[in-house]
Amino acid sequence: MIKLSLMNNLFKALNDSTRRQILDLLRGGDMNAGEIAERFDMSKPSISHHLDLLRQSGLVEATKQGQFVNYSLNTTVLDELLAWLISFQKADLSTTETSTPKKVS
Amino acid sequence: MIKLSLMNNLFKALNDSTRRQILDLLRGGDMNAGEIAERFDMSKPSISHHLDLLRQSGLVEATKQGQFVNYSLNTTVLDELLAWLISFQKADLSTTETSTPKKVS
DNA sequence: TGATTAATTAGATATTTGTCTAAATGATTA
DNA sequence: TAATCATTTAGACAAATATCTAATTAATCA
Image (cartoon, rainbow over all chains, first blue to last red; front, side):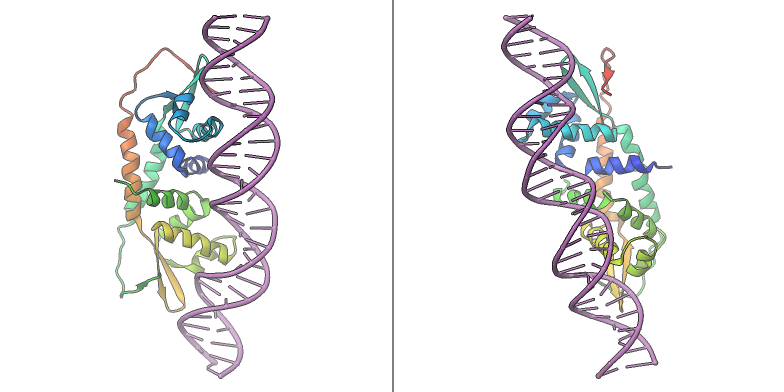
């Protein structure tokens, strides 16, 4: 069973190029908020907001270390999405051709 | 290589509960616009708009058949997304524990 | 041909989203 | 303690989005 709110937050989090870039960055290892912000041509508060959305979705975890906040990737959340996707691939088996309809342009 | 615009459209299309429900519906087989609209408590033009976004992302294909427009699922687009997801799972191998930092609430 | 049906387009509107600057919070250090 | 540094919160604003009703287009049928 897939929790709706989880999927909602997940797709919402992923529906932004900056946030996906942040996830890509974190694949190379943990980073703190400042280090992440440095990589973008965008204000720190904006990055902080993006990090918050990523955290809400569960895609990243934030841990305070002194005055820094460390961000790390949490890919377990993606398992739900992966399962959802794979179920679609399976559903595609019943491809019964009909005449030859025209694609709508 | 993953095309950015494709991923943008894909995540955009998936970032809506109604559109995901439409995809789920189409797993059961093709449906025309009216049949799809019947299933939702929403005006036909709104559903038409959702179908348009799904079509733009490549997730569905629309073929005109008489006065009806048939919509069918196209899961090949999801392959890109699947590949992207799986690459994240791989990246998660380097989990080196440190002390025991506290999660930010 | 004229009426009906299926679907989309147009245009309006309220809500959500991404971004910014300024201010606040909290930790470190001189 | 006071200054500095890292980060977030608050508030404003423009752009994007989801929805609606009314109008339009296109196909079918009496």
